[in-house]
Amino acid sequence: MTEPQDNQHGQIIFLNGTSSAGKTTLAQAIQEESQQPYLLAGIDSFFAMVPEKWGGGRAGPLSRDGFYYDESEIDHDGSPLTVIRYGGTGRRMLRAMHASIAALTVAGNNLIIDEMLLAPELLTDWLDTLAGLDVLFVGVHCPLAVLENRERERGRRSRPGLARGHLRAAHSHGHYDLEVDTSTAPAAELAKAVLTHRETGPAPTAFTALRQDPHH
Image (cartoon, rainbow, N blue to C red; front, top):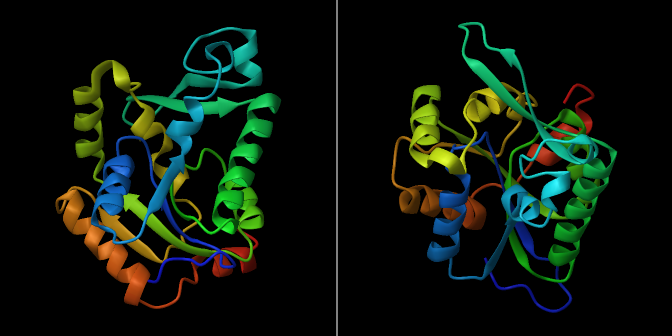
């Protein structure tokens, strides 16, 4: 892959997976292994911008309009499920995040998107916002037992039940250009595989297929 010129759009590596799947570690490894500069943006860096009263785990009426944890459900085996929900203000903020990432790419920057799709409508928004851009869609997976062990190791930096809560929904759309399991190899090795696919593999088709699939 050659570095984008001033009149060229950048390229996107879109990493999607549940909490504790290893997306950020993989993204940072891609930045380290790549011979071209990649900016890293996504859900964690976005949430760091949100005032605590509208997110960040603080309970209250404003968080219901922004972002909050829903811990009202349990899994089939009785395990707790934690799901991030959002209200009208949160939805507007998410749309703005998507648009800002698209603008960075249109300006000629390569981007790694570190994402956990919170709801199907957000994928639809990404498909619309990134239309016309070169997106490699990568599914980042990990066995549930490993996810929950990582969750425990992260302690207060993670919410119990969050990995399980978003595990199925994050990948419910089905289509990817490439899928990786972060429990099978070091991040640097997986990063090289992603970059090889990005640079010499077949042209990405997942976003095109998803746009044509009414059930994504």
